[in-house]
Image: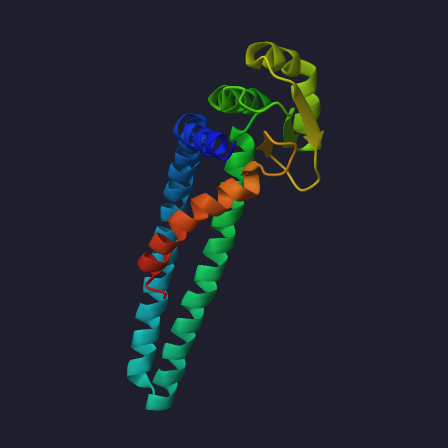
Length: 200
């Protein structure tokens, strides 16, 4: 049974997760483009502030120059914090827009087919309240027919978009929720953002 679980996970990673990764790459590309635009605007503002600060520093004492340098560092720290918050919000919004009930139905079917019905337990899919209602109304019977598996839809206040799926009566699950996907995408974008802003 342990080997079957390992084989299932490997197969899901190779096939089932591909659609989610493709969607994540699409969202990441959009988020990166928007982040670069924000960064360019921020860099322009930062260059103006630094230029103004440099002119002022030439006219003032060393103590004033030290204060301006500290203000510049503080500005970059605040800028990083605001851009990170904007980026988090942007990524989550894009994920929520992309993970429509139709897309969720495709992902669920692909994950179930990747599992090859190796588990006897019912397949439990946890979604937001709204997505659970839409899937049950428009897609559940088709999913059950195509997957040839018993599928139970559950709703959770913890999920705003996306899904979690369990093949073993919720002893474990695969997390494709908006928050999990956002964490994955932001973890790949933020180091580049820090490099551009030259903030450690």
